[in-house]
Image (cartoon, rainbow, N blue to C red; front, top):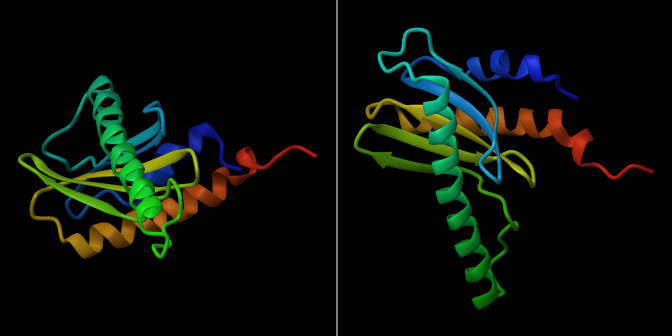
Length: 143
């Protein structure tokens, strides 16, 4: 299990090379932890990071719900419920990438517009699987 004080150093491992910030949020939009690249030109205030995480979570959960509805329409689709492997959105101010880290939290990366998509996806999915493993004892039923 991961301690809360260890979340920012873990997230900071993917920051750099165009990735400005990384966040872990619950599916409800609550911020569990965040880290920013010290070399980032667009340093965000803690409140801005929390607000960005909430907004991105809402969008990601909408995509997840749409995926579940599509699965109901076509049973041949084998989507994993409430799981986003990697969603990259290109916005005016940069890239936003989202990956599911278990059934109840998401890992989000905020990057420069010219950040390589492949590198962003690779780092984000690796971090998401690590966060999922670290938080899995919290979701296991108590015997």
